[in-house]
Image (cartoon, rainbow, N blue to C red):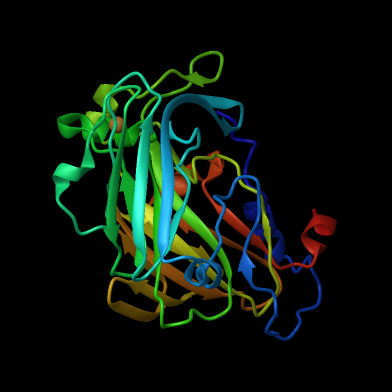
Length: 321
Ligand SMILES: [Cu+2]
């Protein structure tokens, strides 16, 4: 594929070694907070807005078969919630009563399992085409959780075809430090593009072997570079769909804090998130320059865009390139 499409980050990292960006400034603590907004990032409201909202949270997930643009001129005949890969971020606050409706517009049965809910698996469905179902529960445990299709013995194939996403349950009484925020859902696509750049669907034998043709952050091969400032705190809500353990690392810095269930860690270089799990990681932009969130065990996918880049050059990287 397109080996020339090396993300800007790699070039910027090489440039920084030659001091192309000139003077270094002292670290300042930026006042910028709130979710990053970019076309390829799942929309996020954040803790303050979510916890200030009603305690009754309702979501609708529509199962649809959609040809999704992955970037780099590659498309994938995906199975989706709401036409997107991954599905929308479901945000709730600890103690909220959550109702999730699944409306099935697809050609086979689909259901829903959210790892944030402690409930009878008999509520997961699936529901037949043209049908709908709901699952509801009070969420009691903060964290970044995976949700996915539940379809009995073929659930794995449905997840790998795209029916998955992140559900965030914010702590109600513990305010998170002001930060720039984003969601990172890591997943694979189990096939390769044909001559027209189309991956026609999930290859069952690849799925069976946990052998993806491509790996993605947020259902995309290409990502917007996110502008930050030295001193910014960045918080990423990570969900790993799989396969394998995601080795979450930020090139150029150290994870200041990692929350994983009740575990609260400091100063971690790389944090492993198993398939079917999530974690909340925080890092501070230490100085002007370029930084990149990667799966350190999937660096072979860097040429395919598998990096989320943070630009703290104040525009100098563009000048240098
Ligand atoms: Cu399904």
